[in-house]
Image (spheres, rainbow, N blue to C red):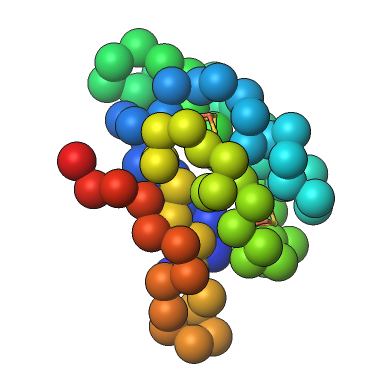
Length: 80
Ligand code: SF4
Ligand code: SF4
């Protein structure tokens, strides 16, 4: 289970979440999603402190944050 999880087809590539991540582990990837947007990726999931800043800021509810140690979802993206 990853800490940071993005629903890539919900991400519109706005670039907000990489700006707010205190660990600077998010960046816009080079690949396109199904609707032609570049989407965010996490470059070092082990460094994620599960603060949920990224998920809270995302205007499209595209991010889920999980705690693998507790096997728990801390912030769930909208599923649609
Ligand atoms: S939960 Fe916090 S540390 Fe983890 S990717 Fe999101 S903003 Fe960064
Ligand atoms: S804030 Fe949401 S829509 Fe914007 S880049 Fe991050 S995941 Fe994608």
